[in-house]
Length: 420
Image 1: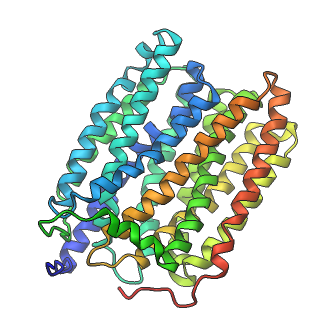
Image 2: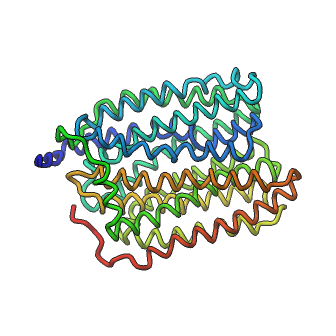
Image 3: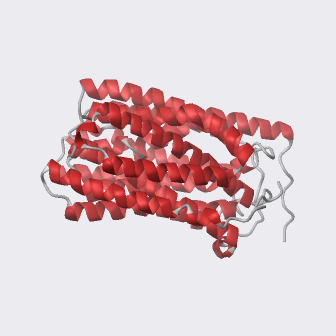
């Protein structure tokens, strides 16, 4: 066995944190623009069905399974080189969407097929790059400050998203269906990220031999990791499915315009941006499990509230408030998720644990909207009033499933922290 590489020194860890925080607003805003919310609206504008919208919602997560074969490369290549290669691929396959206006002029079926192919390949590149992103970050965090670091990291990204979606709302209100400039701006952000991640330091996991996938899969038999996977898989599946089809419901069944639906996205991003840094301090202080219990309960209640809301409440004001509150809960859940998985991942070789966690929870998150889309596509009536009744039952069922994520937290061991 090759001895583990020594930890990064304090100067390298500080440089890594600075570059990560600086690159995150460009990189993850680029990723979000091409994977969530905006693609949903773009596909609806092309006339895509619920199943096709569900497929796109799954792309951002379903291809996370590619992290398992990518993990085999970590023992032979630097994590930074894998990240750079994946990011370059993602930029290339996102390029057709920059010309969305020409895409929309094609025959209906061709336009949807090309858009779905591009969105899917973006999901491939993003998932491969994510294989090494969190293992890189694991080398930068200081003991006891994981929550604060990720609160800061994600706050900058969400403020960048807030600015983007505010501009998007202004643009789509005046230019309905014109998504090309928005995708072009997102592509430019992705290009800018390239220069920031090129200098990331790393704690090497290269041994000259391939990392064995079965070693990562075997970790799922550990009781703490199994409970973690159950909590986060259910929570992610419900969150992603809920936000994707809340947007579709508002656009098709409640009759909101594209600009009004983007207002709800602005509210969602704003809720995350305003709460993430505070959540980081809370998670470091009270622990990840306590936060996961509270936010899971809150998300289940929020989904039930959406199911019970009268039709008259589904206007831009009430739904924006709902998205704002749901985002606050989602932000806390996400910070606690990262805090917990970093506790479970050994600092000298975190890739196996982090990739296993990403693959299992990502597949659950991707499978949720795909399954929901296929079911809704089959049972939704054509009239908006009937569709709204179906969506109410759908969100009530989703709330019950979300509540099931509480069960594994009840048996969590009292002292689960792994020494840093």
